[in-house]
Image (tube, rainbow, N blue to C red; front, side, top):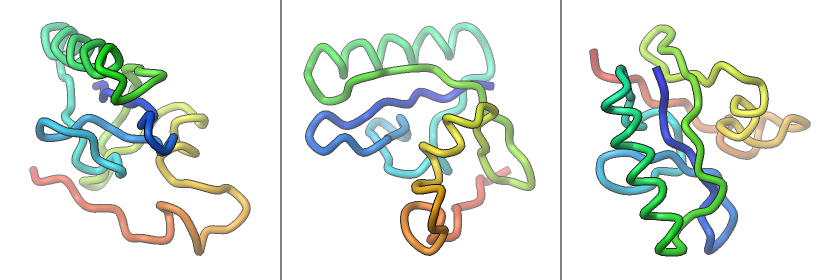
Length: 101
């Protein structure tokens, strides 16, 4: 399973493609379950980069654990959560949204 991630060009915040736009949390990101869905997300990311909305567009591997979308790689886990030195700030300070089954 994969999701599309990037950094918003206006402020550098890590974002994920969700429901036709860019969300600041990974929890509702559109999941690609097959190659056709991956190709669709890649085309969306390329268009957004060409329109100067986002930079560093990538498809990343994720899993769904207990209803929560979790990146596989450590780098992406840090981008999704926020600072590693204080868990009371950043994205990890808010409870993650559960995915509908």
